Length: 388
Ligand code: KG4
Ligand code: ZN
Image 1: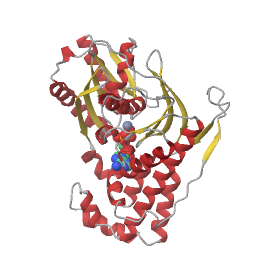
Image 2: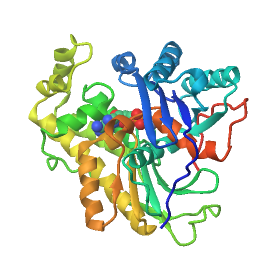
Image 3: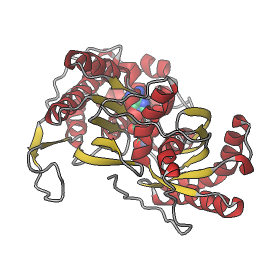
């Protein structure tokens, strides 16, 4: 058994996150207490395009960054002077979006003479769970820990362990093409169910039959041929693939005459700027609800089954499930059921900290703060930053 706790005097870290379409700032105390959490979502900006438009995202971040940071400090009863460090997402993400948060964090760090800590966005998602578990008083995490990070841009399995300086992560599986959240978003776009697709599909799936349409998934389990990977000798990787299911849904739409219904839904909802889940429900027929429920069931089953395969492969003692798709109700239920059967605890972030936020960035920075691992003042954004 191993436990993580590094306790010194209270440390207040200001987190800043701008890697995709949320401008966020938060103050976290000593990696274990969420003091403030402000998220400005750009959904209204990107909704008409059915996905994130990178140029618009950068512009919106520029508009929002100063008031969002100011509000996070105000809500925390803190000032620029009374925080101890600034943590910022340095990648992966949209280059132009990352640059806004990073440039602002660097300017603050320079002007305030406070250290800056660059954080990997995926590490942030993992620490969203750890932050909330510590806040609940759960400090004895059993290792090995396997984390599924499943969001709009990523579907990744990492073995995560604390080291002398921060944590280290071993990639034991990831998607070979689309991320799971991307599949939710693309299927929602195809069916005229708005953006982002996950929350609406989550709601609509509760009204459909998940066994109506079968979407088979291949098992992608193979020996790791990368000699650099220390798990390559005796462990097999478990990879994901979510581009095929999007094509399968498209084929179903075409072979089952759903085009006309999609067009009717588009016209019915055209007058509403941001339709509610209830509006979408009223605009869906039974066949569409069944299709949506079956799609969600297939993705959830695949995520759960493959995570379980990897968990057995590495004999893990704890599961963490995090990222935007971890907000999905069926995914949570299904993981809880199988984890109980396996006798392995599973932890999720609250729904608020499942999707992008800056509290997770501030929490991930805390062990690095303790270790004095600060970023160079010239730190630059890395859109394709890998977690290790
Ligand atoms: O973590 P996140 O905010 O951003 C990335 O790092 O990508 O995740 C956003 C993704 C979107 O694809 C969105 O559709 C999905 O998370 N999502 C959901 C749910 N809520 C958000 N997917 C399924 N069910 C949900 N309830
Ligand atoms: Zn994210």
